[in-house]
Image (tube, rainbow over all chains, first blue to last red; front, side, top):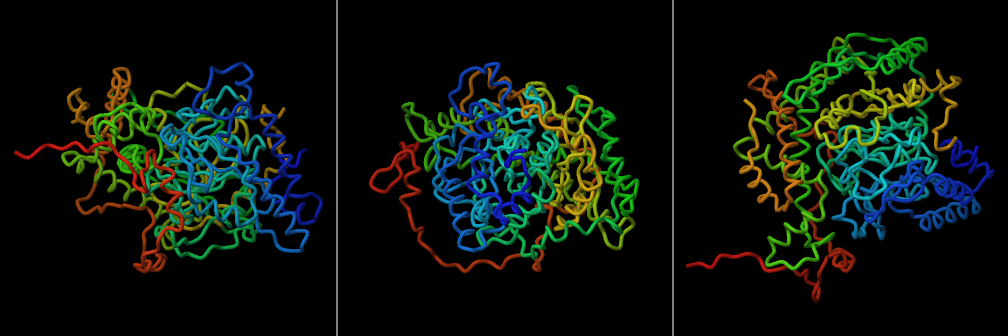
Length: 527
Length: 106
């Protein structure tokens, strides 16, 4: 096993015991990138070759020189007997939606392809201060608009390391791919409807969407400002806890961050689950899909995914948790339609800043006036998904439709929030510490199988999006492989700021399953 | 009742959004918008009490967890050149834009 295959906790120990160095860890990671990455995403790209189809293509930009400087600094501090920081020597990749000073920050869009950020996002700044090694910026759906990673303007788009003919999920698919393939040990992603948890599930890694306001959004290129949450992707629960520890907490530059104290997540991990009340809801086992005529049909959850959830519940019960069945979450199914409205309104608002004036792309064509420059710049700079969101957002927030769509969606969000408040109410009927659900309705789907159908693609997030409406935290952890050898994810949802409890449960599940055969399986690109 | 985004309404939205679309893009986008409208039509059937409030953020911003407002103090950006260097066209410290459309007053 190579250094880059070890977990963050294992590397932390090896480094402090002086059994390796930060430079050696970085070299191992860069070698892995050289083996599995293939061509990095770029705007101008030729057709895929057969070799390309076997590579993962997680990155848009490598920052290996920056990482090497950081690694040398960590080794120097260790040699001087200083504390090099909580994530010292740990290779980290960053979703290319975060600004990093003097580094290209593209949001995987042509309109920002030439943008070099003049400042660094708070979560990234905290990672650098903790001694993390920033190895590069990873691909994503353009402006995070997607659940497969296929909408990036930077091609080739990431491929699933477990089966490169399949998508890695999205929009943090580059992050999940990089961690699963050992191209970084941790990755910083964002989750607006499930964009950390869904790719984590598809790629067999751990993904955590923190409580809204737990992690600063300063320096994040916004999609839907009331929903976006930066968070970690990691090989295991401990890695997610280590990263959250560093990036969480109030930020004077983001007034939406909460002043709630940050617990010691790592110390909490080993407390076990004895006495915790973990719920199961039938509303998370019914999958809804829209039909082209405007109707809806319900389909059963694939048996392997359902069995993974119930098996996890059994294991947690054996470890001392109390399993509460039949917890009603009746508004779960409205998460996607409400999201279709709220996220589009906020996306359209956020995208109006891209006009070719202050930064980013400007059309090279001759134009008669400012208005024509806007039109041509945005026509050439935006891909199809941003255009779709702008138009939908403008329609549903227009004065004559706002009450019917936008304001109604915000009231439906209230109902979704109430479901969680009732489930986690300390004096209520259920008094849950966490809700256990599937993360996704399917395992990773084939590339191009869904892309182009914007409605069906959105329904891939139907089990993750309620947590974004409610603002509560959600953790996806690997829970086995299906018959095709593809990872299955299960999800833990909790009350506001209960990440410590979700991580405890996740860690207990890891301990309960640590000897199982599927834990030894490796992604196909590493075989 | 489900609304439909007609070609005329679609063209109006495209103009408001400051976009230009070729015919193929326009056809795809209008079809997807109408498909999405059918999907969100479900919202209208959800029973809501008259007094159900809107939720703009899931996590309530109570005084106990909110940051105090920052002091209203002006701090010059330390390196304005870093920002100006990102503008597509600059002249003597000013960002250059094409003519703004105007209508002469009669």
